Image (tube, rainbow, N blue to C red; front, side):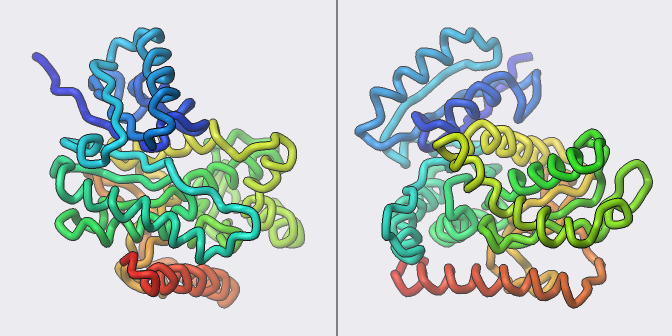
Length: 326
């Protein structure tokens, strides 16, 4: 039986993150090893030549699941029939640039992409925003796609989640996949809240195994500022780890997971997060949909940390609204 390839869009296709991401997708790491894929690569006109080079390398890798590669600088063309989209390309923050300027500049990228998704993508499209500021970029794209269910627009908190697992594994000498019920709340920014309140490893509470001082003064800030730390030592921002985390997010979204993972999804009001904001929460994935882990009792400390994220996300939302971008 012939299986119709899944159309997957990657924006910023000539960039560093895409250079790792595309190989994982072509290898079947998102939809599975028995599902063929077609890649639509979207770039700005100036980067189309480099994108051609990326496509040549993908072809030279001879992936049996990769059935076609299409390159375009037109969102209407790139998102036509898309089943999944990784929105990677974004404008980085310039020297002396205010966050509001960055939000406005990215609004002019993600607004048109949201409209193109609305007008041309497949009915089952799933959109993961990787380009920063990811949460609010997802909000912008979502607001330009009124005919697509809001739940189809996510922002990536999985990198923060994976960083949390890695830090805990290193601290306790455990395998990263041994940890359960770790969550990162809120915004993919320095405000984010990596939370180990319910976390366990090998049946033990993680909070009983680490010092409170280490948790508050080393773990939380290190996870939140890990990207800056990598830039400091590598000279450029996280790329391969971001790509790997994007694959983890989309794979679990499509194929399902009962293990708690952190996903930034449009809020419906749970845990005091304003409806409509795209915020990281504890989730599982069932039947192709994220479900919030509900009924968790929050301490005053947790409420305070989550509230700080909500305040920041509302400020970002208001800034793009004032600029007429949503």
